[in-house]
Image (tube, rainbow, N blue to C red; front, side, top):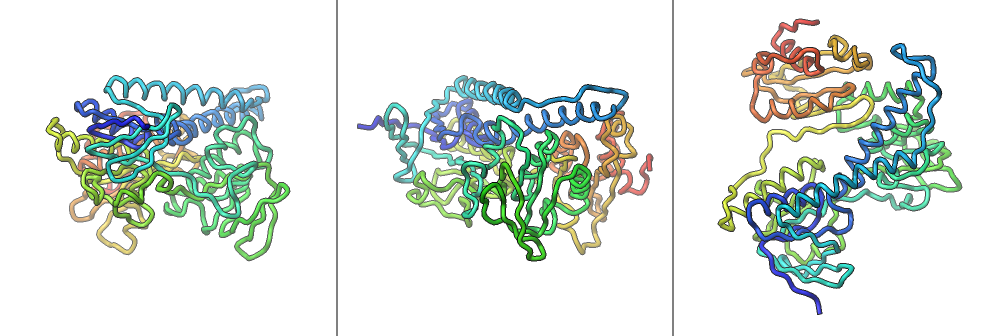
Length: 471
């Protein structure tokens, strides 16, 4: 007979949304159970997404730097031809993940959150049975937080297995493939495709749209396209992938021609979908919004005291959105349970996004595509090539820039974008200014530290006001 447990809060999914909700619930004195369905504490982001991919990207950039030095010297530095042992690199990456896993486990333990490893299946909105290695456990809760995350989309004619891989398998390869074909020119495919090109693989990218990263405007993506061209990455835009047979991927080009691309590995990165199947969501009576669980501005579903956070709730499917939602929900549940907390709303001005491509792309708030045709918006661009720090770290020669958009009438910031090496580190500054309702004069009036890349944000704002200094 299954063990039965009752709790204040039951959280399904231990990703960035779920574990943050768990820690905050525990801090607020709520009896909390967190069910980890197998991805590991930290979910996709920590185990097979954000963190390991950035580790591999970092290692690839280091390898590229040494390779450049070996090819004739750079910055006065010369080196012998480097070699990459990807198995060792992967082991180093796994060590980082393990350390962070242990950190999350420690934080949950300190917050007195009970973690159960197993697969949960709901029979109704507040009751589930968790299948664990030690037997079944039935849990009933006053509040349920759904944080099941997302999973890679599989193409019916390119099913995962063998040499057809998702980003998960790409991050655990033990050797660099000689030829890698990436199906999908979004941020995941480009981040990994660029990393493997730096590691020495021949890379081809197949994208259905007419250009890469179609959600971003062309000015932001052009420097990435130039890097790909310069480094010999084969681009097939407006093309459709087909089956993979005998080491060759069949594609149909933009012109309708049939083509075969040789590949040791085919990396399919055509998007992610919310994980809604296999855990009894259909038994919970919650309303849906397309493929996502429908929520209001409190992250509440249509079923009383059932909440949802993270990728399950829709775009943008970003880890930091899930974390912020998880914290909001914990505060609300504590407030409803008489444990303090606050009746919060999840209503951010912006959720900044970063592509860790080469070069990096940052976008916060409105971009040119969002204000097309409007004449009440000021737009100003400042090139990184005019920033001393950028030139000193070789970050100003790839067409990078910072761009601001603001209202003509009151100079309120509407959006900030950047493309260039290391611009990801400016994303929080962009989001902060937008969240605080800053005007151009606020950014212009802040003394920015010299020499830093952030000076480009300052100069772009000055330029929007008509008096940039260094251009």
